[in-house]
Amino acid sequence: MVRGAGCREPNSRLRRREKNVLDIPFYRTGRELVSSVRGSRLTEFVLLGAGLFATGAAIFGGRTGFGVQDDVLAFVAFPFVIWAAIRFRVAGVAMASFLIAVIAVWGTAQGNGPFVKHDPLGNVALLQLFIAVTSMTGLILAGVIEERERAITERKRAEESLRELSGRLLQMQDEERRRIARELHDSAGQILAALSMNLTPLEPEAYKISPSAAKAINESLGLVNELSKELRTISHLLHPRLLDEVGLSSGLRSYLEGFAERSKISIDLDIPDDFGRLSRDLETAIFRIVQECLTNIHRHSGSPVGKIRISRSNGEVRLQVEDLGKGIPPEKRSAINSAGGGRSWN
Image (cartoon, rainbow, N blue to C red; front, top):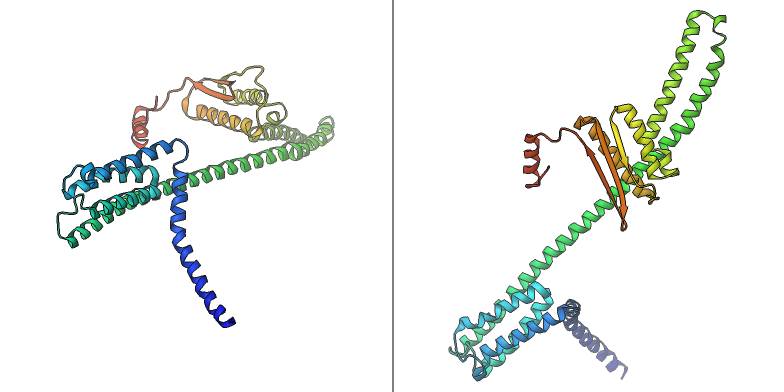
């Protein structure tokens, strides 16, 4: 008895395994079909099924159909298969092919449809060929569409990852700039200030030393003061402290004052008094955009003036930078338009 039970157990496991193997494709197809017809597509799916059923009944329905026996007439169902492939992918094609096969086999068995005018073997061969061509065409089309969608999805995912990486790199770059600016202002600036305080008391005592030594002291003080100004300028260009302490408005005004003094370009800043604070990353991004635009004005446009307008409304921030520069030469504009696929540059 024990041996008999032991012999039956592997057979039952094998039957369950075979059943599971058969159930998996139908389960996956059904799940994909249900997920694809949710929402607004349910009506379209019903219309597709009704149209396919009506077309199949008209072709293979005998008295209720067209009553003709032309082999080509069977392929009237092809547009519905293509519709299913485009809108519902492989699951839709599986449903459409199954419905077409059931109607075609039933109609042919009843002596109706285009596959009854030949000998029985020829009719069966044509019926199988029709079902195979219809199914394979729809499945291939659905597979191509899904592969294309998968490639587009992967490309979008790669682009999103690239954007995140670029944003992270810019954030790390700005953090490094902020750190270097703080080190220059705090450490190097304090060292230069201490050096200046050590050299300043020597000026009144210049008559006690040789003229060359007194001249060296004066030149050293001048170099220390000039180096202090350069460090403050570099620190300000890397990252203005007012941008973190007070906000975008004060940080831009301070930067524009230094820019106008260095470049001799008059810049008008138009920003509301109640502009308020933004997130740290957004304020930094706007500041870097303004900084890059002013650099381009100074290097390329040749404009003596510029205007920056910043506004904020409905959760959006608008930045406009204008100048009176010479613009892009016509020959370069044509090259840019050709390389950019016809994009217009004015």
